[in-house]
Amino acid sequence: MSALTVRHDPEQSWDDLVRFWEEMEWPEGSKVEIIEGIITVSPAPAYHHDVIAARIQRRLCSVIPEDWEVFQTLAIAVPSRLGMLIPDLVVAPVRENTEADTHIPAALAELVVEVTSRTNARHDRIGKPAAYAAAGIPLYLLVDRWAPEGPTATLYGEPEGDVYRPLSSAEFGEALKLPAPFDLVLDTAEFPGV
Image 1: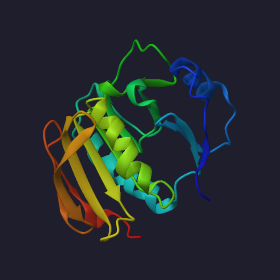
Image 2: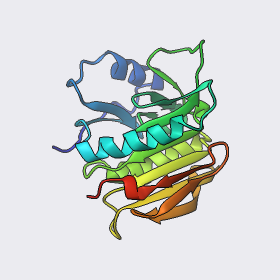
Image 3: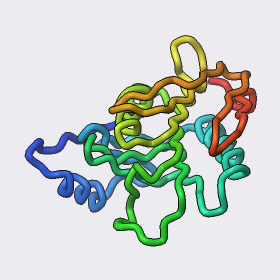
């Protein structure tokens, strides 16, 4: 099943778009995001997708500070890019006083991780990283199971405007190092293949 998109009225304000996203009854188990002003409803991820996310999460939990968490279903808001995005993983400090219960400002994230699915690979490669960079998120890890040259994991950083610089890349089976504050080596050999 592929993603469904719901276009909104261009005259609609960001607050109206977020309110629609929050209040609409979406299909249970689906992932609902606003990507470049378009509401996108995707099916639940596949098994291998979730295994990869879980293995990365386990490794991240072993190195983050006590007052940080690794979130799997946390929405992050990027109003400047008309985005309400739900990365596969978000690493962010825990905040007791947040303005909204449904999301946090993307600028609070230290790292976002996306694992591509066949239906969303383009979003994970183009639209979402532009929003993450524009929000100033320091690191973006793209685990691209469907890359044309074969499954790869690429770490991006040093955001400038809406563009990241590639910091390192590894084909599945190779190691990929995440810099401080993580100082972590991910063994992509632990990731199930396509």
